[in-house]
Length: 47
Image (cartoon, rainbow, N blue to C red; front, side):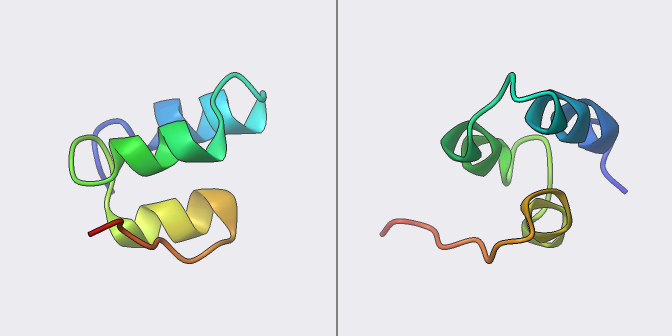
């Protein structure tokens, strides 16, 4: 589990972070798998 997983999850759950902000954290603070666990959605990176 990433160091900031719980922090990102709590921000998203409290509606302090949007889905886009959680997506921005992928690769920096959380993994793609953790994104899926937090949001319940598949991560789709924009190429």
